[in-house]
Structures are given as C-alpha cells and as structure tokens.
Image: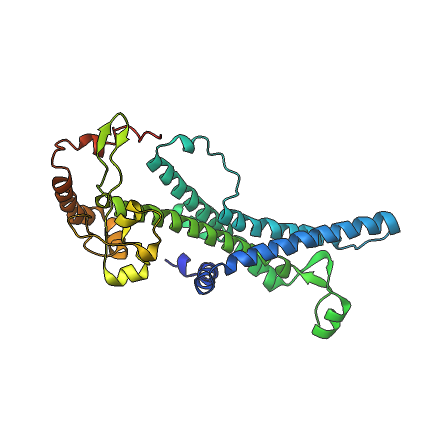
Length: 329
C-alpha cells in the first residue's frame, strides 16, 4: 500500500485521469492532439535534416545541435506514435495463431493483449511496485525524469538562444528534463490508450453477453437457421436508461429491423420479445457476478425456451455449440 501512495504512482494516475477527463469533456481532442503533434514532429525532422544536408554539402556549414535535436524529436515521435498506433490499430502483430482460436478464445487473447500493454506502460513509467512481487526492480521514466529535473543538467549540444539566456537567466545548454518530457507524457498516453482498448473490448463483449444470453435461433437442419425475430434478443425498455442509450436497449427491434435508426427503434410486449428486469448498466454489473447473474437470468431463459420452442426437448447441442455455423448463401 505504501508503494501505491508514492509520488510517481500518484503522478501516473493523475496523467491518465487527465487524459480521460479531456477525452470526456472534448471527445476526439486527444486524437487531434496526437495527429497534430505527429505531423509537426515529422515535418520538423524532415525540414531540419534537409536544411542540414544543404548547409553541409552546399556551404560547408551547419548547426552543431541538429543531430541531437532530430534524435530527441525522433524519440518523441516514437513514444507518441505508440499511443496513436493503438488508437487506429496499426501496430504490427503476429496474430496467425490467435486468429485460429475460437471466438471466445480470440476475445480473451485480445483482452490479454490490452492488459499487457497497460502493464508495459506502467512498468516503464514506474517499476518499484514490482518489488512487492519479489522482483529486483527500481526506478522508471517518472523517477528518471524527476532526477533530471532536480539535477538540472543540460544536453550535450543543444543550447538555448542567447536572448533566452539573457531574458530568463537560463543556463547555456537546454535542460534534459525539458527534452525528456516525452517520457512521462508519451508513456502515460500509451497506457491511457491501452486502458481505453481494454475497456472497449470488455464493454463490447459484456454488452453482447447481456443482450443475447441464453437465446438462439432454431436450427432447421443442414446449416440453416430460422430468420431473426424479436424474441431472439433481450429487450430492456426502461424509460431512463433507454433515453440514456438512445434506444439501444430496444435490441430486439435492432436485430429484427437492422436498417432502422436507433432513435426510431420500436418496443415489443413480453410475449414477443423477452425483457430484462433492469437496464443495461445494472445488468452488466450483475453479469460480472456469475452466481447472481445465473440466479436472475436462468429462470427467464428456461421460460423463454418453454414459451417459444416447446418442441425442443434437448438444448444440449445449443449450449455446447455443437451445431454447424449458419450457411452463407
């Protein structure tokens, strides 16, 4: 507990919380910031490198700090590029194996991958907490940056302009902590994107689980299934949460009439579409407690089977997923 209350951990939590707050208040603002910053970094690296080549080979001159400047910008580009690549899904991945897994296994692998990304960012930012697991680890990006800030040493070749030195009383060489700001910010942003990915995958799977728990279409034989009807999805037509989710909870009509927009989705009586006892938020929380979920939902599933498919006496093949996949015409 003492490790969790140290300054680096609190700073890390504050960075990620700030990103979530900005994204909540201004959706897409973080993405626009990443795109704009990456464009500026690429343009600056290209411009400095081009002018340096011209100056060196055309005028036998050049800027002594150009190499260190572009190297630092490239480090910024890598760290901010990591988070943006998570956002747009462009990281290189060796997924030949997990693509062969069944759908449930693939979803578990996706959640595990997002969790690994979170741990990677946390370990790079602050690794002292690993001592609680018996690992001999200390420091991290936050610790390194804070030490550079306290020491105040400068870079090797990059210098402040003379007017900045005179006006602000700055030292000659650019502070290392200024150049290394990308460590806590870039890794914090990467961790934020991985948390976003984990939450998005978990939320999507949890919602899908709640919407279709125990329901299935009747198998007609030879890979054919009956058409989708309203009773093949759980409805939760409760006024407050329906307004909150713009009628998403009228899920039966969404599947029955997929071209119909969400604000126009219709509801159905209990005899035509099964109803959840509560809205999606509370049902999703209940789904994360399996004993409670089964106690609430299993009687409703049995009633649904009796009401809509009294002719089916053996539900084993449906529950064990032994039936063939729907045949695509």
